[in-house]
Image (cartoon, rainbow, N blue to C red; front, side, top):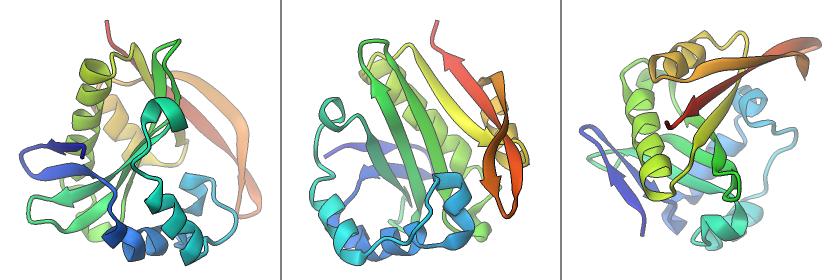
Length: 174
């Protein structure tokens, strides 16, 4: 089982016991704009997803990990998506579940751990992140960790009755 340990957090593979946590996060309407979700997920669908979460990133082109405290409290999720081994790149997404856990260094440590894993273990050349132009926290996080804004997608997402820009950030492992 994949487990990446930092000073304050652990990134670990999803377990069947994460069903309620995943169900609550995936169905939290306020985070749908970040995940691109437009409809609620049924518990049964998420249970099936968890049953297949062990599948290899080379097979499913995605890796989702649970961010936990060293004491085991679930704090959020972090993903590699659109994994492309030929071009050695993947997207990176992160969601810290509750406001009380944000701005405490959890996201920074989680992204650092996953970047190290992606570059050192998966031998990726680059990671990218798509960030809403109004998401100041994520913009600050990715810039702080060496991601560079590589593009602007104007009017990319239609959220709450208006179009919003999305920024493309890249981190290239040189």
